[in-house]
Image (cartoon, rainbow, N blue to C red; front, top):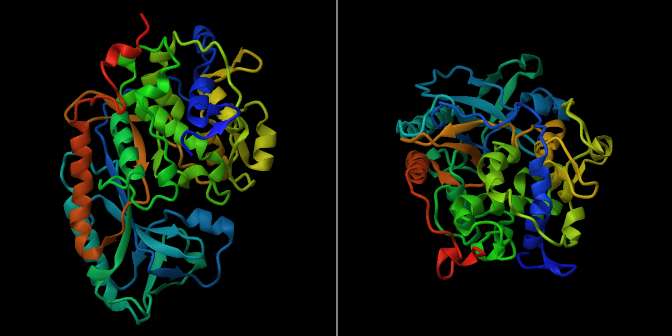
Length: 431
């Protein structure tokens, strides 16, 4: 996908041109912001949330659930009947939904579990012990209650007959949500693309090979961007943004765009752009605006409004009707400027808003929230790292400990030299 030409311009380069053309005009006008305005500088320490799915266990009610019931039950607390659970440090057992069934998921609360407190590893031990001691109910009349959904029960617990009772050999599927510097996001995306070991990178990402890793060389056409500003933080933002744009057409309407990339922003793109990128682009003016097929490629959702939203944008009714959003429109609203009409727009993350109204609203659902890195004052965005390696029960404690240690490493890591630099870093700066 990288380097593919549409109408004489690579897809990567088109995203950069589309995002920066006429940017000085957009920046000169007073910007209207959707939501709470500028990014929030918060004193909140970085949290570390972990979701651990146990998809081999099926939770079945008295009848099949409707789509609406399945959506509502997601995340509800699940309580085993007749089993005195042990300690639960900053985590709960909840109901998760798959394509066909409800199953249990242990969720570590990132509002309570803080990076640097070194509790995540022992929480992994607690979660494994919980399932291990619950396993003897297999083959018996094993039931749970799901808070708020007693009317759909009783809820039976069905353990697979062909799986070993020994939970140490059973697979757990984790994903991690935490605050992360953009330069670390660049490395995680790169490790995912190159299938390099990293606790927070996905070896089995569906579109891993198509992840876009930008380098300084990609910005050679943008002479007014200072070379020193094209740092790993800058490249991390544009690598993630370009990956989402290039893979938009691959989104499954049933899932929305959340599965096209294994790194999902929970802080929306607008907040990231305004804090980390916009100040570096104010002097950029591209003399030509190339055309690309990518402009009309679309993010896709099942066209069904589940959560009405009051924010408006041009063509909203048609977008909701079709369950689609053009890449170019997403970029226009992200920077707050309509390049066709040369008018300012209210800045908003339309992918996040469409996901909110059509799905669970996970992409960018934290708005402008950012959290502080461990041992520092810098506020950074929150991301969810998905499709991580499946972990056997015997390794769950170690794996969860490794997530926290890797996050701490990234938080304390100084900015690295940009990927793809050849020669002196200032050679891109136009004299």
